[in-house]
Structures are given as structure tokens and as C-alpha cells.
Amino acid sequence: MTDKPILGAALTIEGIARHRDWLLEKPRDLEIQDLHKAEVLDGDWRPLAERLRALLDGHTGRVGLHGPFWGFKIDSHDPEIRTVVRRRLLQGLEACAAVGATQMVVHSPYSTWDHHNLDAFPGAREQLLERAQMTLRDVVARAEDMGCELVIENIEDKDPRDRIALAASFNSPAVQVSLDTGHAHYAHVSTGAPPVDFHVHLAGDALRHVHLQDTDGHADRHWKPGDGTIRWASLFDALSRLDSRPRLILELRDAARLRQGAAHLEALGLAE
Image (cartoon, rainbow, N blue to C red):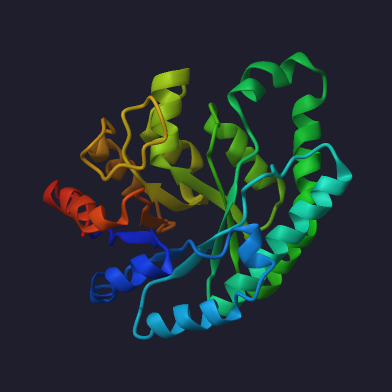
């Protein structure tokens, strides 16, 4: 990226309505966060999708969707659970098609326990990959068909290379890497994981999506940038070296503070 990157946001329909003028003033990327809960996906969500599309009339940024994640992991040992997970993620892709999303966020299965224990059991690391591939095989095929990208977000991950290898194992342009800055900084401070900018360097152009949120490193705060202790200059310096143009998505617990968070990064001269 040669120019300052343009910030986007992760919002529900209420937040989109509130910040619509900000979203439309530049080609800001958007991540829709209304269509990931089981009760929504099993209900009549089509009218909501229609309202979202109407609200986004005139929007020129890229649209993504946070996929289903509550209550499951993509590497379940139980084949019946994998069937449920597969169905949920296919429902997520159906919602992507309805709202015009070209990217869907999927949660990484890796935990701190995995980091310290996988290599204690011969074959366990490879078996985790196989289970995730069995879960996602049909999902990836569907994503490829519809031109949608699945991006795997770090949650409890300690070593970013695990998630990067998982994405690469599908050998598909439809499976790439996501970074949540707050999750990474929590893991750095509390579990000894690498700092946030290392995640960018290690992923390289496989990084296609970033959740921007600040934290103190003790918990998953989702504070606006500037309220925690993330070193934003080093993160954006790492991002500037990529050609992949990852979507830079402010994901805040309090959507009312979205523009304050954006203003902080703008004042640092890092983004617009």
C-alpha cells in the first residue's frame, strides 16, 4: 500500500444506520455482524438482508460478513458436530450471497493448550488439520464457486504460524488469514505470544482482513484505538509492506466510539 489505508468497520444494522455517512464518504470496507447467530440463521433473515442492502445503496467499499462461530470449533472430533458446523457455515455463505458479501470471517480452532500440547501427541497436529479440512471441505468449495473468501481469525492462538498453515493447507484462494489485533495483543501480553506486527510479517500477503481493536493485554476489550497499549505505528508499518490490501475493520464493543477510534489513527498519520 502506497497511500494511507482507508479504515472500515464491523457493524450491525443499527451501527450502519448511525455511521452511514462515514461509511459512504470514502470506499470504506464493511463487515456485517447481524447474520452469525443460530437463531437468526434458522429464522427468516431475508427481510433483514434486504434492509441491509437498501441501507448500503451508494456504498463503494468491500462488504464482508462475520460468519457463525458461537458454540462450536471447526476441528471437532465428533463427526455429527462437524456436520452441524458445516451447515452453519454454509448458511453463513448463503447470507453472504444475499447481502453481496465477498468475505466471511471464520474462527481459528487453535488454543493456548494446543500450543503447549499438540506436539506431545504424535500426529495430533496433522489430525487437527484433517478434522478442520473435513469440516470445511464443502464450505470452501461453495466459497470458491461464489467468489467469496474465508478468512481465519485468531482467537486463542499463541503461534500465528499455526493458523497461517491451516489456511494454506486448503490450497485454495478462497481460504486466507485474518488478524484480530486485540486477540493478538492479549496473547502477547498474557501468554507470551509474538507482538501484533509479527502476525502481519508472518502472514504476508495471505493476510486479507484485520479487526482493529485495542486492549490492555489482560482481556479481549474491543476498545477504540488509543485506549489500550497496542503499538499502532509498528502494525501499520508492517501493513504498508503488503500487496494484499487487507480490509482494515474497526471492531469496537461500543460502536458509538467508532469515529473517535478512527480519528485517533488518523491523528497518528496512519490511516484515513
